[in-house]
Length: 445
Ligand code: NO5
Ligand code: CA
Ligand code: CA
Ligand code: CA
Ligand code: ZN
Image (cartoon, rainbow, N blue to C red; front, side):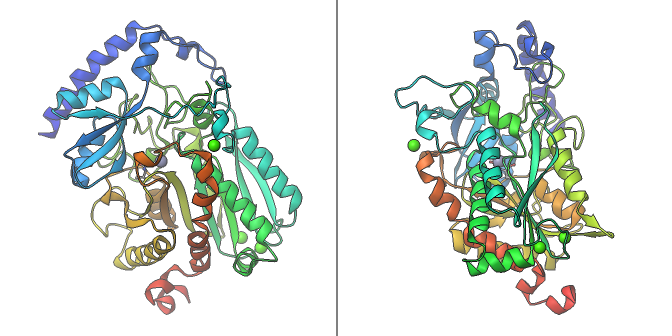
């Protein structure tokens, strides 16, 4: 059954690829750090991603099946989904019998001004470009040099620095304190997550000495923030000054389609379970092999580098995404609550803290695969490979109507500070995550 479906899709894809090959492949001829030449109008239209509403899909299995057509599932409702798709992917879903309703494209927010290349639209000026993000972090380091530092942990495909910001008392020393990791912006269009990182750097930096909870956590934990896992994708999304709805990184593949879904490229159960795509051009393309995307490998190497004397120092993590207002925990690769490497106690501790965090920010707590199956996600790798308690936060808004991937900059402050208590909870639990299920004696002594 599955084979027949795949071969049918294969034929459709082959036809689409044939069309794509007829267009000039100028993008691939460009050196890796150069901008691709503008493509012919038809080809650019083919690549254009927009959102559609599809009625019918009601279960995680339905949604996983939708995703296997190459689209990303952006929103799961009781009896419908919102997906992002190219025209070709939308067509494929239609041939499979689905009715798609095109939704409004990304907002312009130009405020009467011309689009400014490589910048957010005028009305969204409070969002930070990659350069503005780095400047804001450098400013915080200057203001709090004993508390905040940064290091370059590697480079993106196009050569941008990927940085890790460290926050702790005696920040220059590697103290024996539980470490906690926050990662942001795996998906290019999820710009609010970079603002989340900047909010954390500012709130922790400025709050030390005046905010008791913040002070205690910086005294007793080492906080790592990777504010921009996918800088190339993020910059590409605003390259023309108008939002592109881009999700992937900017690494070319064989053929015409660019980009890997970083959150399908991690080296645990990579490509195992129908939760990613092996087709370049898919919104969930998993890459040629695990960690084939430099950005994934850079962050994975950093995490592996936190193993000191055979012990992983990082105890817990949140990977920030948008949107849907969810708190998710592993696994994504299976719909079973427990599985290899994830005992009932592991699951219960994840859920107990996940539910408490969700109580404070008003998000919905659930296992990741309740949404749809994913494989090669960061959380599965963090837990399955490194035994780091791992959460994904899908931030504001709850739905496409609330702005989808592009909420206006007016919401930044409210929607980042909304997670302060949840982040502090994770830090406070990080010395013994099993305390949350009353098993401190058993696991943490
Ligand atoms: C994420 C989570 C389900 C992990 C993903 O909409 S998102 O792409 N941000 N959702 O599919 O990787
Ligand atoms: Ca605005
Ligand atoms: Ca310290
Ligand atoms: Ca340490
Ligand atoms: Zn995402």
